[in-house]
Length: 153
Image 1 (tube, rainbow, N blue to C red):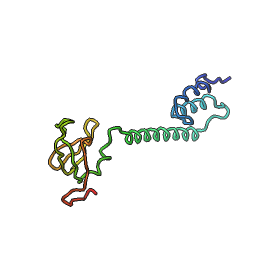
Image 2 (tube, helix red, strand yellow; image 1 turned 135 degrees about the vertical axis):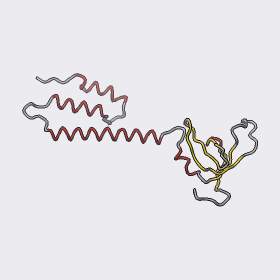
Image 3 (tube, rainbow, N blue to C red; image 1 turned 180 degrees about the vertical axis):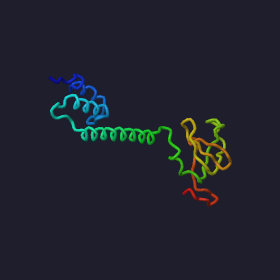
Image 4 (cartoon, rainbow, N blue to C red; image 1 turned 90 degrees about the horizontal axis):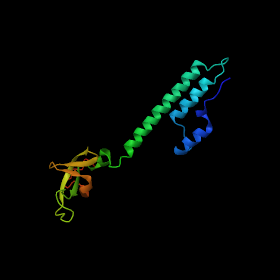
Protein backbone atom coordinates (compact mmCIF):
# COMPACT_ATOMS: atom_id res chain seq x y z
CA UNK A 1 0.00 0.00 0.00
CA UNK A 2 1.37 3.38 -1.01
CA UNK A 3 1.21 6.20 1.50
CA UNK A 4 1.55 9.89 0.89
CA UNK A 5 4.05 11.78 3.00
CA UNK A 6 2.28 14.19 5.37
CA UNK A 7 4.39 17.10 4.11
CA UNK A 8 2.27 16.98 0.94
CA UNK A 9 -1.02 17.53 2.82
CA UNK A 10 -2.97 20.57 1.73
CA UNK A 11 -3.01 22.16 5.19
CA UNK A 12 0.81 22.34 5.22
CA UNK A 13 0.82 24.15 1.88
CA UNK A 14 -1.94 26.57 2.84
CA UNK A 15 0.18 27.95 5.68
CA UNK A 16 3.19 28.36 3.36
CA UNK A 17 1.14 29.89 0.59
CA UNK A 18 -0.27 32.57 2.88
CA UNK A 19 3.24 34.02 2.94
CA UNK A 20 3.57 33.84 -0.87
CA UNK A 21 1.55 35.51 -3.59
CA UNK A 22 -1.80 33.80 -4.08
CA UNK A 23 -2.07 31.53 -7.09
CA UNK A 24 1.64 31.15 -7.79
CA UNK A 25 3.62 27.94 -7.84
CA UNK A 26 7.34 28.02 -7.27
CA UNK A 27 10.02 25.60 -8.29
CA UNK A 28 9.84 23.87 -4.89
CA UNK A 29 6.15 23.17 -5.44
CA UNK A 30 6.88 21.79 -8.90
CA UNK A 31 9.56 19.45 -7.54
CA UNK A 32 7.25 18.20 -4.77
CA UNK A 33 4.53 17.42 -7.30
CA UNK A 34 7.02 15.60 -9.51
CA UNK A 35 8.39 13.57 -6.59
CA UNK A 36 4.89 12.69 -5.44
CA UNK A 37 4.04 11.61 -8.97
CA UNK A 38 7.11 9.35 -9.14
CA UNK A 39 6.51 7.81 -5.70
CA UNK A 40 2.86 7.07 -6.35
CA UNK A 41 2.94 5.86 -9.93
CA UNK A 42 1.47 2.52 -10.78
CA UNK A 43 4.07 -0.25 -11.10
CA UNK A 44 2.00 -1.71 -13.94
CA UNK A 45 1.94 1.57 -15.85
CA UNK A 46 5.02 3.61 -14.88
CA UNK A 47 5.74 7.08 -16.19
CA UNK A 48 7.21 6.96 -19.67
CA UNK A 49 10.75 8.25 -20.17
CA UNK A 50 9.60 10.93 -22.58
CA UNK A 51 7.03 12.21 -20.04
CA UNK A 52 9.69 12.41 -17.34
CA UNK A 53 12.10 14.25 -19.65
CA UNK A 54 9.33 16.65 -20.70
CA UNK A 55 8.54 17.47 -17.08
CA UNK A 56 12.21 18.01 -16.27
CA UNK A 57 12.48 20.33 -19.27
CA UNK A 58 9.48 22.27 -17.96
CA UNK A 59 11.11 22.51 -14.56
CA UNK A 60 14.34 23.80 -16.11
CA UNK A 61 12.38 26.40 -18.09
CA UNK A 62 10.53 27.47 -14.96
CA UNK A 63 13.77 27.87 -13.03
CA UNK A 64 15.42 29.87 -15.82
CA UNK A 65 12.41 32.14 -16.18
CA UNK A 66 12.32 32.71 -12.41
CA UNK A 67 16.03 33.58 -12.36
CA UNK A 68 15.65 35.91 -15.33
CA UNK A 69 12.64 37.59 -13.74
CA UNK A 70 14.56 38.12 -10.49
CA UNK A 71 17.51 39.58 -12.39
CA UNK A 72 15.27 42.01 -14.29
CA UNK A 73 13.52 42.99 -11.08
CA UNK A 74 16.83 43.76 -9.38
CA UNK A 75 18.01 45.75 -12.40
CA UNK A 76 14.87 47.88 -12.68
CA UNK A 77 14.35 48.40 -8.94
CA UNK A 78 17.69 49.88 -7.97
CA UNK A 79 16.90 52.46 -5.33
CA UNK A 80 19.88 54.71 -6.02
CA UNK A 81 19.32 54.88 -9.76
CA UNK A 82 21.42 53.41 -12.49
CA UNK A 83 23.95 54.57 -15.03
CA UNK A 84 21.50 53.87 -17.85
CA UNK A 85 18.90 56.08 -16.18
CA UNK A 86 21.21 59.12 -16.47
CA UNK A 87 22.91 58.33 -19.81
CA UNK A 88 20.61 60.77 -21.62
CA UNK A 89 22.50 63.60 -19.87
CA UNK A 90 25.71 62.99 -21.85
CA UNK A 91 26.52 66.11 -23.94
CA UNK A 92 24.08 68.17 -21.86
CA UNK A 93 25.19 71.16 -19.83
CA UNK A 94 24.40 70.99 -16.13
CA UNK A 95 24.47 73.59 -13.37
CA UNK A 96 25.34 72.37 -9.88
CA UNK A 97 26.45 73.49 -6.44
CA UNK A 98 29.93 72.19 -5.60
CA UNK A 99 29.91 69.63 -2.76
CA UNK A 100 32.49 71.56 -0.71
CA UNK A 101 30.00 74.34 0.03
CA UNK A 102 27.75 73.99 3.06
CA UNK A 103 23.95 73.94 2.87
CA UNK A 104 23.61 77.50 4.20
CA UNK A 105 26.38 78.91 2.00
CA UNK A 106 25.58 77.53 -1.44
CA UNK A 107 27.56 80.20 -3.26
CA UNK A 108 27.61 80.33 -7.02
CA UNK A 109 26.41 77.65 -9.33
CA UNK A 110 29.08 75.98 -11.42
CA UNK A 111 28.40 74.43 -14.79
CA UNK A 112 29.91 72.00 -17.23
CA UNK A 113 29.12 69.60 -20.03
CA UNK A 114 28.56 65.95 -19.11
CA UNK A 115 31.03 63.57 -20.77
CA UNK A 116 30.32 60.34 -18.89
CA UNK A 117 28.11 58.73 -16.26
CA UNK A 118 29.54 56.41 -13.59
CA UNK A 119 28.41 54.45 -10.57
CA UNK A 120 30.52 54.32 -7.42
CA UNK A 121 29.41 52.76 -4.12
CA UNK A 122 25.76 52.89 -5.18
CA UNK A 123 25.78 56.58 -6.15
CA UNK A 124 25.62 57.92 -9.71
CA UNK A 125 28.18 60.57 -10.70
CA UNK A 126 28.51 62.69 -13.82
CA UNK A 127 32.00 63.38 -15.20
CA UNK A 128 32.20 66.84 -16.73
CA UNK A 129 34.38 68.22 -19.51
CA UNK A 130 36.55 70.05 -16.93
CA UNK A 131 37.26 66.76 -15.08
CA UNK A 132 34.86 67.42 -12.18
CA UNK A 133 32.81 64.52 -10.80
CA UNK A 134 29.36 65.66 -9.71
CA UNK A 135 26.85 63.50 -7.81
CA UNK A 136 23.42 63.64 -9.45
CA UNK A 137 21.96 64.87 -6.15
CA UNK A 138 23.89 68.19 -6.64
CA UNK A 139 22.38 68.99 -10.04
CA UNK A 140 20.24 72.13 -10.10
CA UNK A 141 19.60 72.50 -13.83
CA UNK A 142 20.03 70.60 -17.10
CA UNK A 143 20.09 72.32 -20.47
CA UNK A 144 21.24 71.73 -24.04
CA UNK A 145 24.93 72.42 -24.57
CA UNK A 146 25.45 76.15 -25.26
CA UNK A 147 28.07 75.46 -27.90
CA UNK A 148 25.44 73.88 -30.13
CA UNK A 149 26.96 70.44 -29.71
CA UNK A 150 23.75 68.46 -29.22
CA UNK A 151 24.78 64.98 -30.30
CA UNK A 152 23.31 63.57 -27.06
CA UNK A 153 19.80 64.90 -27.67
